[in-house]
Amino acid sequence: MRDIYTRAQHIVTKIDEDTDVFGGAVIPPTFENTIYRYPDFDTVVETNKGAISRYSYGKNRNPTTDALESKLAALEKGEASRCFASGTAAIYTTLLSILNQDSHVITINNVYGRVSDFLRNVFAKFGVESTFVPGDQLEDFSNAIQANTKLIYLESPTSWHFELQDIRTIMELAKKHNLKVVMDNTWATPIFQNPLEYGVDAVIHSASKYLGGHSDLVAGVVVASREFIANLPQIGAVLSPYESNKLLKGLRTLPLRMERHENNANIIADYLDKEHKISVVHYPGLHSFRQYELAVQQMKGCSGLMSFELESDKEGVKRFINSLRHISIGGSWGGFESVIYAAAMSGEDKELESRGFGITQVRLSVGLEDSTTLLEDIHGALQSV
Ligand SMILES: *Cc1c(COP(=O)(O)O)cnc(C)c1O
Image (tube, rainbow, N blue to C red; front, side, top):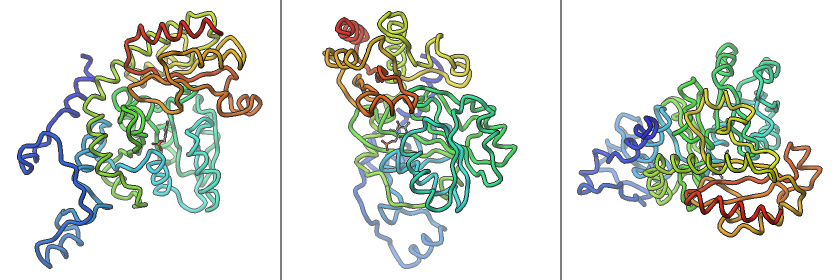
């Protein structure tokens, strides 16, 4: 096993010491409690002052979620973390925490859709300005800095085109101008990339993807310094303790799953790269990928999400997708099962092109199946193109 897997596997399988309280239960119980009772008057006063740490109300803290948060912080090499009811809630709360009236944000053109939606339609109402840049050149960021710039919001790689941003040089720039940097690390997971090591202020994950990994929960997390996490506003989008327990279960196999996702994805990407019916494969793990050098430099591996363009037209894409027998059509990714989605399913040609998509571009989330099953399925469906 490579070192990255060994360290992570230790974190996710370590049984918390305080389980003796629960008869030695090897997994934390799911605490459903809304309220926790106090023994006397003074304990309440001391708790309110912060002099004693006690559970008080389910919206504030929950023991099951606490167990999850300490594992997520350790995996991402941060001091602390906070879980949310979705990745989107984690993003929204982080923006709310950093931005003031009239702040300016620099982010990338192909950032997760809800980020641009929040910036353009919600925060803009409060005078927050934003600049969207391609993000593959340092100049994109340095040229966009204004006197009121507060935040650089990154997502590397992005989830359709897999554009990377050079974290190290962007951090040097940000330090010089005293800017906060937040990064969405959903694609790489804490197994393959740890942005906090570069000095990034906060890392965000949609745990609905690889962290959960079983297509059975929606969750999000922010990992950062203790101070940053303590200062996040409480918007009430807390993760349910049931979901916390499911996420803990998913995490126990995260290193194992990521190793398999990466192996499978490499096999599939190599096959697609050589296949004449495919014009281009977008996958940071491929030598032919335009930012391969940077990918090797700042990531320790690659997950299982890629996209490729068929040497065909929209009808060809339709025939290809409808001919797949094992791989399902699905809009999300990061689960145990392989799913595919076509760009053409969510926009007209002109609109897709203006957003930088290929008309025949499809996105494949490579799951945990036997790679031969997947290769045979893709090969078979390509015959119909
Ligand atoms: C899915 C996703 C999110 C949002 O996560 P939800 O849990 O669906 O709210 C954020 N960032 C990226 C890169 C995603 O793929």
